[in-house]
Amino acid sequence: MKVFEKIKDIQPYLAALKAEGKSIGFVPTMGALHDGHLQLVKTSVSKNDITVVSIFVNPIQFNNPEDLAKYPRTLEADVDKLAGAGCDIVFSPSENEMYPEPDNTGMEFGGLEKVMEGRFRPGHFRGVGIVVKRLFEITTPDRAYFGEKDYQQLAIIKYMVKNLSIPVEIIPCPIVREADGLAMSSRNMRLTPEHRAMAPEIYKALLRAKENYSWFIPSGLEKLVTTEIEQNPGLKVEYATVADSVTLQPFEDWMDTEHAVLCVAVFAGNVRLIDNIILY
Image 1 (cartoon, rainbow, N blue to C red):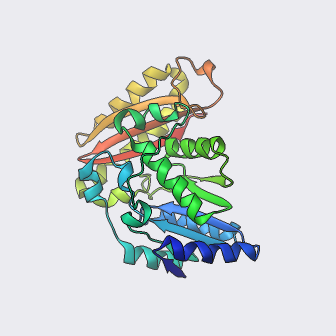
Image 2 (image 1 turned 60 degrees about the horizontal axis):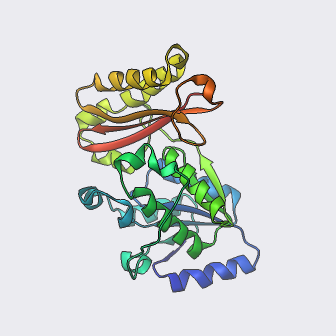
């Protein structure tokens, strides 16, 4: 497995592989890798000749400086895990390598960025769009793999690729969960033992919502999920939103859409967790 830090080094290396007809799969990450990330990598390995994984904590997608400072950085352990998962190339650039000058690019996502995460994390998706577009330009993959835990992010990346005619196929991959149901996340390692014990209640509430949604109107289901999660004193719901799973827009009646998703953001202590479930 090769590790690159410089764009000028990785680009010609990948260009030579593509000239040989090799297919390239790409998994963008911010490191602190867990089994969810590794499942994306293994999926890419099984479908492509070459798998590239980026490790870059992208500062411009953090609207909370404290969150950026606390984000775990475990590069050496990450590289070891990637080698074990069959990854071929790691791209681990510095902030200056990715942004030698401030990037003031405007990003537009057809309104997908204005709801849910967008309401509480201003500028977040602009930062995501800028870095993913940049990474696509550097790695020129045939396919890129994204987890469905970040449901809104996945929708936005799909929109950007289509809108900008970027020649990459976006492959969604199912949420990977711990044995007790908690969605795997790099943030989980920041949970206290007490909050880690409570966190699986988020998914349990989502499962109950899926089983019983038809008994409620969408806004009623949102209130039910919020109440159930907040029965746990260490959990605080930032939002629980029922939305069309394609447009991400809220709706008032189940007959208004053929596909619905329920997305939540929950603080477990001071650690913010997100999760979702397809209702139908």
